[in-house]
Image (cartoon, rainbow, N blue to C red; front, side, top):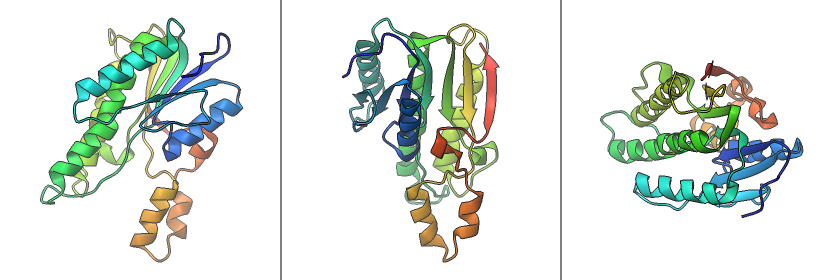
Length: 224
């Protein structure tokens, strides 16, 4: 792990090796922030990477990431923690893959969001920013993607709780859930090509501002 910058702004990007996370790392580094990536593989562009060990135990993974981030940061605080980890899986309650997909969605969205929230209580500056990755679709029922909707709905609830009094976040900090419809990523484009012969109009409606590290829309933004 690389040394933490003594001065300047710092950000942790959970999911820093995914399509969205890679863009976030690139953007903030270009703006002269010190950037650390947290993911199952290293992001070589980041100043430091915390490698998440794969396990079926949430408590083991949470403890491992917490300890490794503690070692990396020491007493230094960060200005922002961006949890952009996640994924997508479809399937109704009748699907043979229901249990498998629910387990995967919970790990990708809720494990990462919960760990990020705890890291914020330890390492986020007063007045800092925590963002979590929700989904606009989860504001309503998601009968064709049960596991995804359940997990993203839980992220929304977590964010609302974090934005309330006595949540454990530092004074003056903000907890924000980002609710995109569809991000314009290589994987999503590949999936759309498998479903339609004319994806162009749909692509044009997708959220593209992640390419600059910016967010399209937010749900909750409250001071703690």
